[in-house]
Length: 104
Image 1 (cartoon, rainbow, N blue to C red):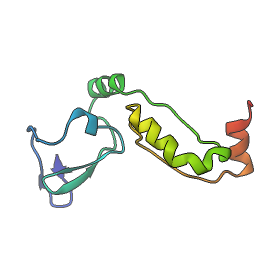
Image 2: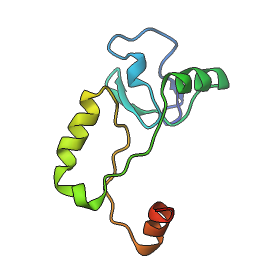
Image 3: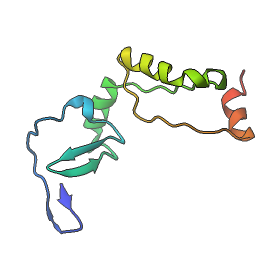
């Protein structure tokens, strides 16, 4: 890794204890030698294929009638062994409602 700001090498290829394969996914923030790093993309096609084959993604939406049970739902998802990586709570406008509920 090259530090653009300070124009020097930051990190050469090395083994770092405490970071496993489960910690490495897009949008993850990891700490290496007291620096927080955000993973924004894969280094090459092989790495992309390898990591994406290990993790599959899905989209889940909690409907408004289950709003009061959101904490229990998230807890059940995590206990089932799933990793929640991009949790977002939002309020829908008429256009986004049509996009998500249009087929129902």
